[in-house]
Length: 269
Image 1 (cartoon, one colour):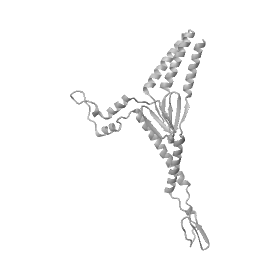
Image 2: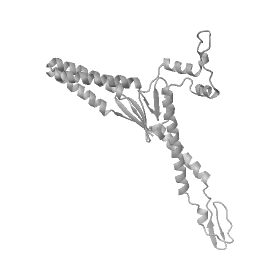
Image 3: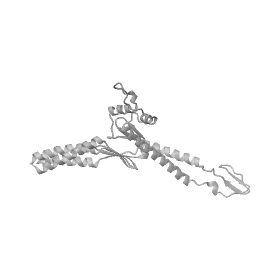
Image 4: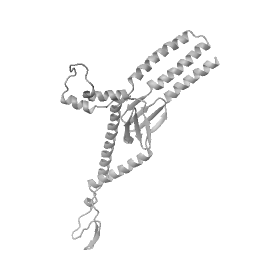
């Protein structure tokens, strides 16, 4: 399931500005007056590019493969298995190995966090007036309020990222254990039975001209422990190297390239 998280206020401001910029661009084309119109178009283009990269581009996208972070100028992608830690201050920081990326959205302020604490603990809010106007909460509502006490939308998004990363690691561990179980072949079951042979674990003995070597059977528990050990080694390697991929955003670069052409044209006209 794909989830996209953006700032609602930033999206509203961004699209309002885009409508305003489109109207003014049409007006500049219809009433073109030489260098004055080109300078106005260059200024409008610079402001529009800034609004685009700051308001419309930033997002956090949770897909089946991993988490994708779109910041104003860069894109970042981390597979779920390689998400090591997710921390929240005023924004979300995702760590993979020795590298980390801070998400531009969503963000929370101190005022929003204080409001979340008050919502979870209404008893801390001083009463106003002579009469009690707040409804009495049921036990379920009180438990839900206590669980959400102090949590903002940013905390909830961070929890979604953490839960999906943990689920992906558990699924990978189960798949690895199943693959290791299928690859294990009991050696003792294939060995023919020999009469009068004394068997000792890992020791070959000759009795009646027959020489038999018994190999200890590989149990499911030992295979699982081996898989866990290999998984731990792989996790340690991922922690050192990291799988965070950060690239420049082509859309942001294209927007600023178009603005640069407008500015150059304004000076040349």
